[in-house]
Image (spheres, rainbow, N blue to C red):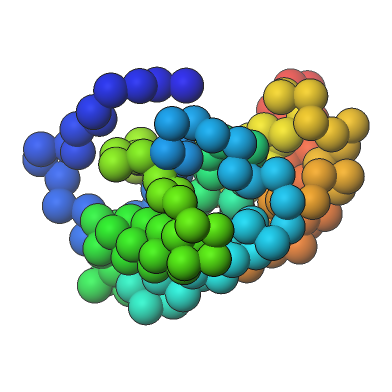
Length: 168
């Protein structure tokens, strides 16, 4: 995992119909996302921020010490920087209120998806983080992932066919 203070792109305004892959790490990389109570609380606040800023959450995967989120703007006025600020502020406030300590590291990591990147390919990659980390035997077995726009099986099935057609 990258460390340090990541920079935003200087020539990009983060407003409009774009897609982003985001990673937020927990404070001191503590394993805070190991139970559903914490994950559900934080997810509800990320969804709240997404709704307010006009983003769909295409995929998310809570790892023990960080979360991956793939968001897609739904309006020309969707602002990724505002979404990040609200998502971390809301979830951090309610997490601290419930559990008594800080949730997030100050900075997160974002990547703007290029036009030629297929949304569901990136979504599948995010959902499979638990497999690569050895936390589950299958995506369906891991409890802390999902999408607000697609059933998990649809994401996995859609991309399986695409991979087969590209490799053949």
